[in-house]
Image 1 (cartoon, rainbow, N blue to C red):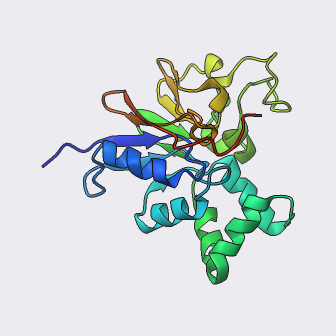
Image 2 (cartoon, rainbow, N blue to C red):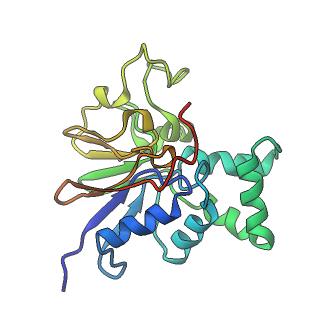
Image 3 (cartoon, one colour):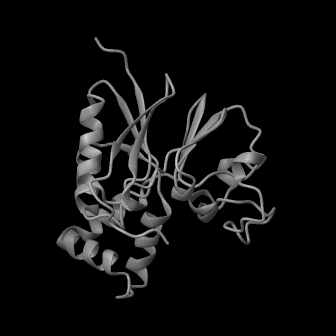
Length: 219
Protein backbone atom coordinates (compact mmCIF):
# COMPACT_ATOMS: atom_id res chain seq x y z
CA UNK A 1 0.00 0.00 0.00
CA UNK A 2 1.27 3.47 -0.85
CA UNK A 3 2.34 5.76 1.96
CA UNK A 4 -0.26 8.30 2.95
CA UNK A 5 0.68 11.81 1.90
CA UNK A 6 -0.58 15.12 3.23
CA UNK A 7 -1.10 17.39 0.23
CA UNK A 8 -2.02 21.05 0.73
CA UNK A 9 -3.06 23.33 -2.15
CA UNK A 10 -3.04 27.12 -2.26
CA UNK A 11 -5.80 29.50 -3.38
CA UNK A 12 -7.68 27.95 -6.32
CA UNK A 13 -10.01 30.90 -7.07
CA UNK A 14 -12.18 29.06 -9.58
CA UNK A 15 -9.25 27.61 -11.55
CA UNK A 16 -10.82 24.16 -11.79
CA UNK A 17 -8.88 22.94 -14.83
CA UNK A 18 -5.58 23.81 -13.19
CA UNK A 19 -6.68 22.06 -9.99
CA UNK A 20 -7.43 18.86 -11.89
CA UNK A 21 -4.13 19.07 -13.75
CA UNK A 22 -2.21 19.53 -10.50
CA UNK A 23 -3.90 16.57 -8.83
CA UNK A 24 -3.15 14.42 -11.88
CA UNK A 25 0.47 15.55 -11.81
CA UNK A 26 0.91 14.27 -8.24
CA UNK A 27 -1.19 11.11 -8.88
CA UNK A 28 -3.64 12.08 -6.15
CA UNK A 29 -5.48 9.09 -4.67
CA UNK A 30 -8.35 10.11 -2.39
CA UNK A 31 -8.37 6.64 -0.83
CA UNK A 32 -4.80 7.08 0.39
CA UNK A 33 -3.83 10.75 0.40
CA UNK A 34 -5.06 13.49 2.68
CA UNK A 35 -5.84 16.62 0.66
CA UNK A 36 -6.42 20.01 2.29
CA UNK A 37 -7.25 23.31 0.55
CA UNK A 38 -6.30 26.62 2.17
CA UNK A 39 -9.53 28.42 1.22
CA UNK A 40 -10.53 30.91 -1.48
CA UNK A 41 -11.82 28.21 -3.77
CA UNK A 42 -14.11 30.70 -5.48
CA UNK A 43 -14.20 34.05 -7.31
CA UNK A 44 -11.85 35.60 -9.87
CA UNK A 45 -11.39 32.42 -11.96
CA UNK A 46 -13.97 30.96 -14.38
CA UNK A 47 -15.19 27.77 -12.70
CA UNK A 48 -15.94 28.45 -9.04
CA UNK A 49 -18.98 26.19 -8.91
CA UNK A 50 -17.08 23.31 -10.54
CA UNK A 51 -14.45 23.61 -7.82
CA UNK A 52 -17.07 23.61 -5.07
CA UNK A 53 -18.92 20.64 -6.55
CA UNK A 54 -15.76 18.55 -6.83
CA UNK A 55 -14.59 19.40 -3.32
CA UNK A 56 -17.95 18.66 -1.75
CA UNK A 57 -18.53 15.46 -3.73
CA UNK A 58 -15.12 14.09 -2.77
CA UNK A 59 -15.36 15.29 0.85
CA UNK A 60 -12.10 17.20 0.62
CA UNK A 61 -10.87 19.02 3.72
CA UNK A 62 -10.56 22.78 3.58
CA UNK A 63 -10.58 25.94 5.63
CA UNK A 64 -12.77 28.95 4.95
CA UNK A 65 -11.21 31.80 2.99
CA UNK A 66 -12.23 35.44 2.89
CA UNK A 67 -13.95 34.93 -0.49
CA UNK A 68 -16.16 32.12 0.85
CA UNK A 69 -16.91 34.31 3.85
CA UNK A 70 -17.67 37.17 1.48
CA UNK A 71 -20.07 35.01 -0.49
CA UNK A 72 -21.93 34.02 2.67
CA UNK A 73 -22.19 37.71 3.59
CA UNK A 74 -23.40 38.46 0.05
CA UNK A 75 -26.23 35.96 0.48
CA UNK A 76 -27.38 37.92 3.52
CA UNK A 77 -26.96 41.30 1.82
CA UNK A 78 -27.09 40.84 -1.99
CA UNK A 79 -25.39 43.46 -4.14
CA UNK A 80 -25.54 43.18 -7.96
CA UNK A 81 -22.08 44.72 -8.35
CA UNK A 82 -20.57 41.42 -7.17
CA UNK A 83 -21.17 39.71 -10.50
CA UNK A 84 -19.23 36.54 -9.70
CA UNK A 85 -21.26 36.04 -6.54
CA UNK A 86 -24.51 36.67 -8.45
CA UNK A 87 -23.51 34.03 -10.98
CA UNK A 88 -22.49 31.53 -8.30
CA UNK A 89 -25.79 31.96 -6.50
CA UNK A 90 -27.66 31.37 -9.76
CA UNK A 91 -25.63 28.22 -10.46
CA UNK A 92 -26.54 26.83 -7.05
CA UNK A 93 -30.20 27.21 -7.98
CA UNK A 94 -32.64 25.23 -5.86
CA UNK A 95 -29.78 23.77 -3.82
CA UNK A 96 -28.75 27.18 -2.50
CA UNK A 97 -29.74 26.39 1.09
CA UNK A 98 -27.77 23.13 1.00
CA UNK A 99 -24.72 24.93 -0.34
CA UNK A 100 -25.07 27.68 2.24
CA UNK A 101 -25.21 25.11 5.04
CA UNK A 102 -22.17 23.30 3.67
CA UNK A 103 -20.11 26.49 3.31
CA UNK A 104 -21.14 27.57 6.80
CA UNK A 105 -19.85 24.27 8.20
CA UNK A 106 -16.30 24.76 6.93
CA UNK A 107 -13.81 25.47 9.75
CA UNK A 108 -11.61 28.54 9.88
CA UNK A 109 -8.55 26.45 10.69
CA UNK A 110 -7.32 22.87 10.87
CA UNK A 111 -4.86 22.16 13.67
CA UNK A 112 -2.81 19.00 14.05
CA UNK A 113 0.14 18.05 16.28
CA UNK A 114 2.75 19.49 13.95
CA UNK A 115 0.94 21.91 11.63
CA UNK A 116 -1.91 24.39 11.23
CA UNK A 117 -3.77 25.25 8.03
CA UNK A 118 -5.46 28.66 7.96
CA UNK A 119 -6.35 30.96 5.09
CA UNK A 120 -4.85 34.27 6.15
CA UNK A 121 -2.64 33.71 9.16
CA UNK A 122 -2.52 34.01 12.93
CA UNK A 123 -2.00 36.64 15.58
CA UNK A 124 1.26 36.12 17.44
CA UNK A 125 0.73 34.70 20.93
CA UNK A 126 -3.08 34.49 20.58
CA UNK A 127 -4.79 31.05 20.54
CA UNK A 128 -6.61 30.22 17.32
CA UNK A 129 -9.93 29.62 19.05
CA UNK A 130 -9.76 33.13 20.52
CA UNK A 131 -9.02 34.83 17.19
CA UNK A 132 -11.80 36.56 15.25
CA UNK A 133 -12.68 34.88 11.93
CA UNK A 134 -12.07 38.04 9.94
CA UNK A 135 -8.49 38.05 11.21
CA UNK A 136 -7.90 34.36 10.43
CA UNK A 137 -9.11 34.90 6.86
CA UNK A 138 -7.68 38.35 6.08
CA UNK A 139 -4.55 39.08 8.11
CA UNK A 140 -1.40 40.06 6.25
CA UNK A 141 0.39 42.53 8.47
CA UNK A 142 -0.11 43.07 12.18
CA UNK A 143 -0.44 46.41 13.95
CA UNK A 144 -1.10 44.97 17.39
CA UNK A 145 -4.86 45.49 17.19
CA UNK A 146 -6.10 44.25 13.82
CA UNK A 147 -7.37 47.63 12.65
CA UNK A 148 -5.31 47.66 9.45
CA UNK A 149 -4.07 44.26 8.31
CA UNK A 150 -2.81 45.47 4.92
CA UNK A 151 -0.58 48.33 6.05
CA UNK A 152 2.87 47.66 4.62
CA UNK A 153 4.39 49.83 7.33
CA UNK A 154 3.59 47.05 9.81
CA UNK A 155 5.42 43.71 9.91
CA UNK A 156 3.94 40.64 8.19
CA UNK A 157 2.31 38.38 10.75
CA UNK A 158 4.65 35.50 9.89
CA UNK A 159 7.70 37.52 10.94
CA UNK A 160 6.19 37.74 14.42
CA UNK A 161 5.17 34.09 14.69
CA UNK A 162 7.23 32.15 17.25
CA UNK A 163 5.18 28.95 17.57
CA UNK A 164 6.39 25.38 17.19
CA UNK A 165 3.81 24.25 14.63
CA UNK A 166 4.26 24.92 10.93
CA UNK A 167 1.54 27.20 9.57
CA UNK A 168 0.39 26.71 5.98
CA UNK A 169 -1.66 29.57 4.56
CA UNK A 170 -2.75 31.36 1.39
CA UNK A 171 -4.34 34.79 0.80
CA UNK A 172 -1.24 36.75 -0.23
CA UNK A 173 -0.71 36.29 -3.97
CA UNK A 174 1.58 39.30 -4.19
CA UNK A 175 4.12 37.45 -2.06
CA UNK A 176 3.90 34.30 -4.18
CA UNK A 177 5.38 31.17 -2.67
CA UNK A 178 6.71 32.21 0.71
CA UNK A 179 8.59 29.38 2.36
CA UNK A 180 10.08 29.93 5.79
CA UNK A 181 11.08 27.52 8.53
CA UNK A 182 7.71 27.59 10.33
CA UNK A 183 5.36 29.25 7.82
CA UNK A 184 4.56 28.33 4.22
CA UNK A 185 2.52 30.63 1.98
CA UNK A 186 0.96 28.82 -0.98
CA UNK A 187 -0.97 31.51 -2.87
CA UNK A 188 1.04 31.70 -6.09
CA UNK A 189 -1.49 33.73 -8.09
CA UNK A 190 -3.01 31.15 -10.42
CA UNK A 191 -6.01 33.35 -11.23
CA UNK A 192 -3.60 36.11 -12.27
CA UNK A 193 -1.96 33.87 -14.86
CA UNK A 194 0.82 32.56 -12.63
CA UNK A 195 0.83 29.13 -10.93
CA UNK A 196 -1.22 26.83 -8.71
CA UNK A 197 0.92 25.29 -5.97
CA UNK A 198 0.77 22.14 -3.87
CA UNK A 199 2.82 21.29 -0.79
CA UNK A 200 3.71 17.67 0.00
CA UNK A 201 3.91 18.28 3.71
CA UNK A 202 6.02 15.30 4.71
CA UNK A 203 8.83 16.16 2.27
CA UNK A 204 8.17 19.92 1.99
CA UNK A 205 8.31 19.49 -1.79
CA UNK A 206 6.40 22.07 -3.85
CA UNK A 207 4.65 20.93 -7.04
CA UNK A 208 3.13 23.48 -9.43
CA UNK A 209 1.20 23.83 -12.66
CA UNK A 210 0.94 26.91 -14.84
CA UNK A 211 -2.29 28.86 -15.14
CA UNK A 212 -3.95 28.37 -18.50
CA UNK A 213 -4.46 32.12 -18.75
CA UNK A 214 -4.74 35.26 -16.66
CA UNK A 215 -8.39 35.37 -15.64
CA UNK A 216 -8.08 38.69 -13.85
CA UNK A 217 -5.61 41.55 -13.87
CA UNK A 218 -3.41 42.17 -10.86
CA UNK A 219 -4.63 45.16 -8.91
